[in-house]
Image 1 (tube, rainbow, N blue to C red):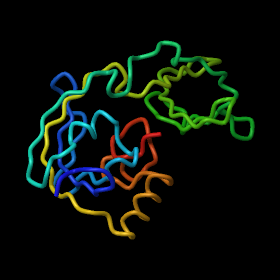
Image 2: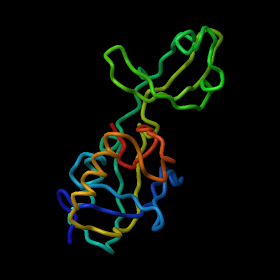
Image 3: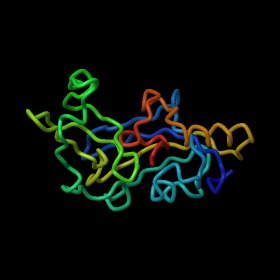
Image 4: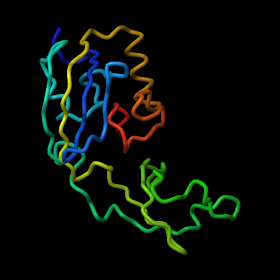
Length: 183
């Protein structure tokens, strides 16, 4: 069976950026997604179109095909008081390197990484961690099959409700995984 619309696809891969391993899906914990549902990057899916179980793949996605170029306007300083709980700055959660779910003025959910904590401000980066990067994937298609009603329900719930994949440790972190949890 070939990878096409509405097929369940399981695969292994190594994702490298400039020769550095960034993410890995293994035989024990493969990436599994429904093709054509919008769970993965369009360019990622296009590279897999027509492949079958056992097929190897190797391809590169430019920043434009992946997460876009870095946007320096997405690095912002926010007043420290918005991170207060009961009038006290939350220094257990708000630490450099942490990634937090945030909401903009329009109610859109965003993930932001804390770059720096200043005396009165918190510097956050709302770029995807892989923005501006060229992504290289090497892997193998482990399985392709028609989705059962149960799999469709599970995929829909996972896609709408958060990550289920190992690489995300079960956390809903759309900015740091490629397991189908992207917004």
